[in-house]
Image 1 (spheres, rainbow, N blue to C red):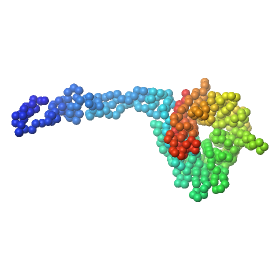
Image 2: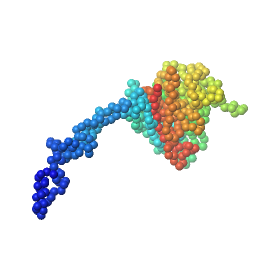
Image 3: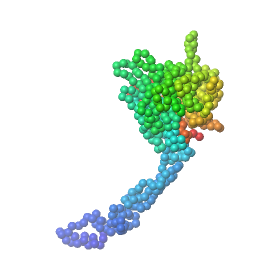
Length: 511
């Protein structure tokens, strides 16, 4: 207490009836060591002048005017500094290199301690229609690769929704297709440069008819998911099912070349091909041309040919022996012109009793020849190993299959991917499981000159219902898959299927 305050207190004690004694807070406010200003900082060591009062630094977040380190030095991250302001509060972290979305560049971009590693899949939507797979495609929006984009297409609550993956790992909505009386399913994509073809099945139940009508539609968009044509056009196929109903397609495939689009439609009883110009001129629409009786969705694919002026399709046909009812499967390829004319059809010779599956057409640039890759199970007696084989096809025939790679387990489904102009596939996504009692496994095989590089992927949560593979030009790979919801509804179960499923995207890198 100051000398003046002591005298005042003694005086008040002597003349108690005529004097008011200040309380301790009022006396403290008079203390020179507790009062301060920006111009006259009279605070003792260990105190800081905060709003004209000397405040213990230990009670503040930081010491005003000082800088402290911030941020991380893990991976590509670099620390910065924070300035402590006049109130003893830290400001923003300045000059720090912060985590970014992981890339396939041998660097730890997200600063989690591991390079080229994603800890979790990216949630695409929790409302995808479980009756069909979601779709995704790599889009090269500019020739220099500066705007390479992952474009996705999902069926949600009867509508179609496009999204693109932003640089920070978030989803950017693009276009939503909506119809007041029709729901959409089986979304399908194909791209060449920044031109993207999108096809889907429209389902409609006219009131009072008790029947369902199905139609196939085609539209064009760019890599951001924005449509480039005024409206979608209908793609015809053999739709008669009797009783006013139409046959529901169970699979769509698309291919796009320099000037045209090919739509491949599979129904339970037959398959059809239709071509149309990229400007969607209905006068250019040719078909439908009927292909074989495709027994399985695991043998059904389309691709532009090596010249970019036509198409190649791989499909399955069957014959039934009228005497004993024995079914013979013929796996075939055929060329299709832009005018929808079916060219030479070639059977791929197989000596195994188990039909091969999962074809992948790889055209040879500037050549009429192409390779078809596929999975052969049961090629060894008493072994569960699978073999990836290839057959070289040309204008007159397909050669006998030749082994390409061996996998140590029985493959249920395969997806292959190759960069534009490649002479062989770059990576395979294989679906398999040890037994019916063990979880499903997705394995990526990268084909290198020395040995196949294996990466077992384990998507978290429920069983995988469908999966597909996308390889970006920078070698980043994406597995698109959908699975049952983590908390099924009362009416949903694996036995009856799911009205809605979760769609996820799992990024991963190669060797």
